[in-house]
View 1 (cartoon, rainbow, N blue to C red):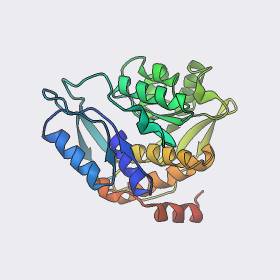
View 2: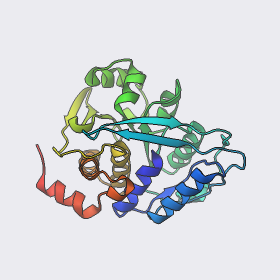
View 3: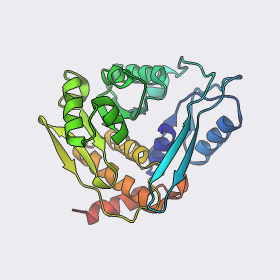
Length: 268
């Protein structure tokens, strides 16, 4: 999740640093090597000698939709070894909820520096999103994550329920954002007490794997570049649509030129 977002940021011309927890195994070594090949700088990662790295399996159908099989890892440390100085030059940070203690440390360090904090609010252990929501000013749900948080299948009602639960949190402040990504339907954003739709470009999806992660990475990059939330959302939407059209895993990441061209062309 965050690793794919970091690769997307790098492909879009940003400087991406990645911090996570891994086992001292083949899967961990492969991930570190692949991140390096994609221009992502890995920082303060000490593979756990007896740990087993998280692994994600993806099955894709002929329509480009996918099913995930996840092994969350085992024997990995809970504490984060991220150095505070890593954030000195950061414009934004992004975390997913798979490692709550790591996300919490990142958000606390970033918050103390006034840095934009984006939470990829996917499916997580009970209470995790609410806890991390107190520390992040940009909370973007996946469809599954919103259903789990709100208990509602319909996105508009789910986002309204989430907004009610998150009252007083930074994401609902004047500089924050609360949203849910909806694949080909685009995304919904909570604005002035109601959900507002942002459409997505129509593309022939080859593979939707990682598109949400690309969205989060592009959104964080745009915030780091001082774009407003509306412009950042459109930038992220264009990047995710191009990723769906291209497929090809990390090799299919769009570059800045392709995203800017789609933004100039526009869509309804």
